[in-house]
Length: 277
Image (cartoon, rainbow, N blue to C red; front, top):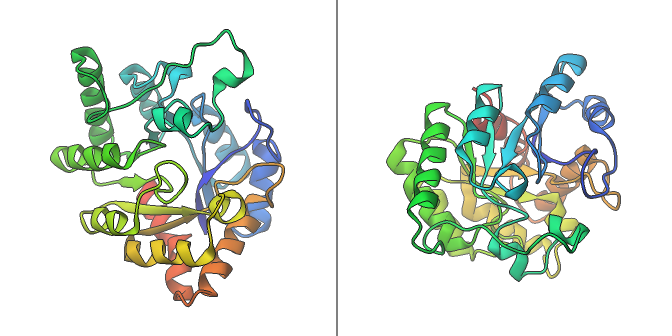
């Protein structure tokens, strides 16, 4: 088992445990490893240290929010050149996050402005921004890293996939596309999966997403087919320990009639092959 999406302390939001405590929970559950995610800093150094100390395959990356300079090629090059494997396009600072009134760093201090990030087709004509996006994508391709869509809109996810295919990026993950952001419809998810995108479903959606049901998640899983990736997106104090949350998601989807073997692959071999070189 390999969890492609988990949060740990230290973080700007409360978390259920620190890196080493989260690692202990995965080791006790028999997982081979996980991807450590943070919205406002690179996790590459933290992941590397935990991997060395724990023996787990702990992977880090960088989310392209304002705290790292937004869609910033320098942050991406630094992360990928020091062992990072995952680049998330804007999450907490995506325009969708602000529109949906979901948590942002600016919530901690009113002196921060509320500016947001986007990519085409939402992005206004800005040569420098387009150049930076292109270089970020080139770096991902050159390092054979994973491109994750973050919290961008469905139209932006589609555009990113087109750019990824043009550049030969072979590792592309739609970040929880049925979550509140980006709230993509099942037929659109199925289309992008057919074109090569992996599709993430998270235990967080099952546990906390308003209006989400097991049957709706099962429909997304069927649309994803063999490109399904199951992850916890856990680490919140009001969620179970991340491996328990992911196991709960697997059991719930199995209860909807999905093949347990496919589900185990979606939480194990599939994400591990997607992330690891």
